[in-house]
Image (tube, rainbow, N blue to C red):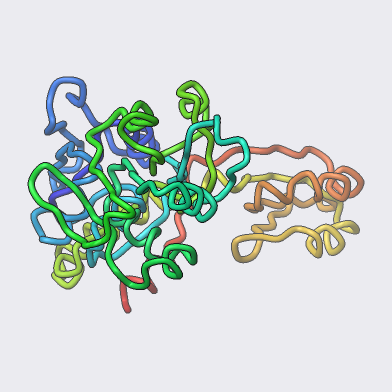
Length: 323
């Protein structure tokens, strides 16, 4: 099973989630082929931009990448699980001196009214092209014509009124001399502010996801291994949202507290050595804990709370695997 994991900003969090899932990984500091304690998995560290294409083509069976690069590459892969880390935004940003401009439409119209073309710098050529073509002001002005896209190797499109230039990094440094507007990743916005830029629109949200090659999922042996990986990683994601609680409660209060306590299925109820007391063992949503605490405090005694490392939704995974 060839498993591509991302380098760069997603790398540290990826190794952390794999380790929380029970995998032991070594050598990631020295090689692009770290070892893992599952002999059925072959890890390879690749750029997240490449992983969707390599998984789609079957060169890798499964991978972790960002939803931004899935959309940018337009590949046909199976997105198995949102891993809920690496959260970021793809934004359009302009120099802060444009204090009266707060939308992409108004920015383009302002430049066009002065007889200027709009220059955009970005790593996301396809996302940006789609974004420009859907803009109402662009459609009113030039209809369905393609904006000009420029790379060192090729050009496409026929409308120079909006030109999109491939950026190889340091995109924030391009305005104002080399670009009027940028489309780039932004987490907190601090880097944009440091480069005297401001966000005018958010194009999309992105996070790390687990993806698989569709042909690999159709091969029985590979499918089983892919679903093992999915089970463990989904377990980590679900575990961050839940609490495992143990509650001791008097017999007469048992029906009332059971009405209030949700569970993955049914709570485990065990009699204690004192026949008038029972123990309740269940898993609840972390967000519900503070809401439930007053009821638990009034009706129970001896509350113990654990944060689970993983919560494995085996029934759900098996249903998906049988489809």
